[in-house]
Image (cartoon, rainbow, N blue to C red; front, side, top):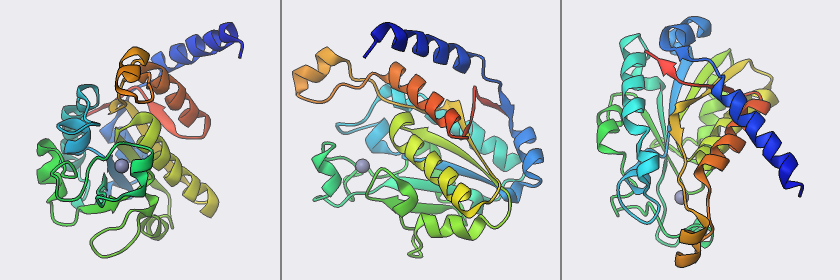
Length: 244
Ligand SMILES: [Zn+2]
C-alpha cells in the first residue's frame, strides 16, 4: 500500500465531509411529500452499546441526546409513531456472532434494552421493534414475526425516505443504510436514505489498548471518514446534521 497516496485520499475525504450541508426536518418532510413517507430508523441505541457491557462506549453515547431531539422534532412536525423503526441487537447466549465479537446484548441481560432516553419512543403505540441476531438488521424480526426486509418491501411501493441514526457508523449503520439502499435499488423504487453525521457514532479502540486486551484495534475517526465517504459513494445522502 502507498501510505502517502492513501493519506492524500483521507485528507480529501475528510475535507469533503467537512463541507457537507445541513438538512432540516421540514425540508426532509417537504421533499418526501408527506410525513407518512418518512421513516426514522434507530439502529442499536441500546444499553449494551451506550451504558454497560464490554462493547459500551462513551463516544457512541454522544449521539443519544441529539437523536432524541431529532425524533421529537419529527414527531412534532407530523411523523406518525408507526414510522419509528427500531433495529436492535437481542442475542441468545450462544449467538454465532460471538465468534467475531465478545458476548454482548444477550436477551435478559439488560444490555439489549433501549436506552432510557428513547424508551418512551419505542413504547409509543405503533412504533416497531425488530430484534436482530446479526449486525445487518434486514434479517431482524418484529413482534408480529415479520422480518425487516419484508416490511421494507411492503413500504417500498412508492418513493420513501429513511433517516438512519445510531451506531456503529462502520458496522450496523453502514450495513443497514446500505441494506435499505440496495433493496430499493433492486426493486427500482425511488428511495432517499439519509445518514446524518451528528446522529451516528462508532467506537474507538487504539492499537496499544487493543493489544493489551487481545482485541482487534478500531480507529474510530478513520473508520468514520472511510465509511461515511463509502456510503456517499453508494448513493446514501450523508449530511452534516439535521436541524429541527
Ligand atoms: Zn451483536
